[in-house]
Image 1: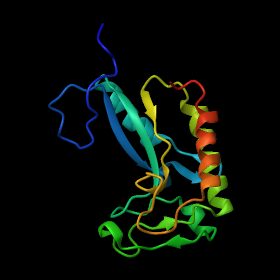
Image 2 (image 1 turned 135 degrees about the horizontal axis):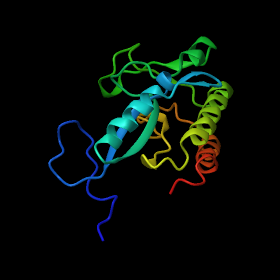
Image 3 (image 1 turned 30 degrees about the vertical axis):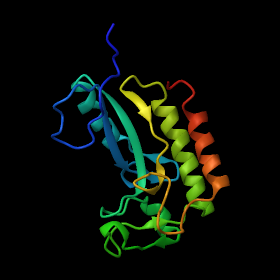
Image 4 (image 1 turned 60 degrees about the horizontal axis):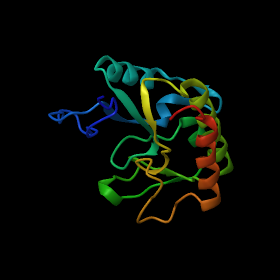
Length: 171
């Protein structure tokens, strides 16, 4: 019997000349999380439908900071005064992408609310094969190397547990 989740995962458009059944997608949190309890899933739904229409499932990661790309932190956090850290690492221009203070209580509250809504909406969705616990750090990779603006270890544990709790049926 053939494994329905097989092959490499294409990470770049146009490079698809090998067997695969999963597709990776990054999504800026800013486009989905409009306010502390207000989500717009349109961008994710569009991606899921595109991937599903190709007969594949999605590997999903949301991020708040992607060096060299537009600001991805939700605007309501910026408006509320969460500290935003500019940097020039990884070819990022000042004011382009910025890292939020991941330890700010409002940032933590927003992330926990987002994860809860995300799980309530998409836990066990057959169009998704993997949920990556992104959101934090450059590219949602849980680091800001070489900068020292990382989320604390206790807060990382809280976020990770929130993902586990929000997706009890996603395998």
